[in-house]
Length: 219
Image 1 (cartoon, helix red, strand yellow):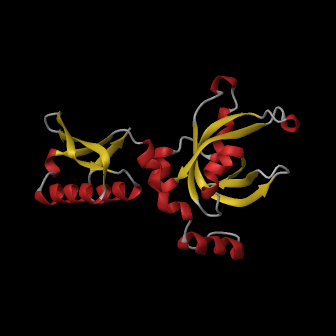
Image 2 (cartoon, one colour):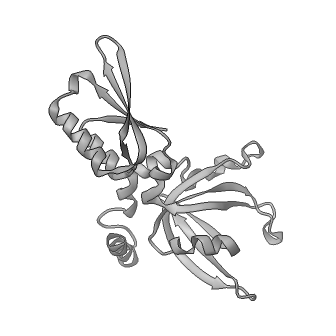
Image 3 (cartoon, one colour):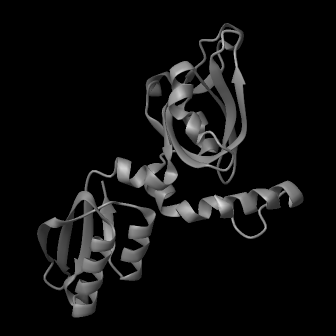
């Protein structure tokens, strides 16, 4: 959290991030796991979309851990992305389960639904009901069920094959990698499944594939 702490101090002093935004390190995680920006939540204000799974990515900010009259813990906080913030709360079992993530500057993915509040003093208002919180760095690994690398026949050489093998070895995990070799001149493609070289999907893995000139699909 060193870089995040430094950036938080920039905001504290200058009111803005001066060097970079802390979410810049997670652009691939956000691209492939988030299905909504905070400022876009209004699109879920529809009875036809009630119960829809929403995934938001951002930073935990303005955390306030508290205790109720019965001694139970709860927390109020904000989830902040590039453009907006959303106030959230967790109580009881969810507080116990997720409190370790509730630290200022922690990058997370929050899954839940956007629904009308059942609280007496907030009836009719829309609120985000949290179902799960996970570290943003682990979000791709949690959600990716299938990974396909797309390789043009014309680009295959010893350096590319070696680089792909070393990258998969470096990011060893449990997910098999499908290799799709494409011959654009003949409009032919061949599919291979690598059961030996399994990977853990992360932003770092995707960045290294991009550096090798290898395209990919995540499902």
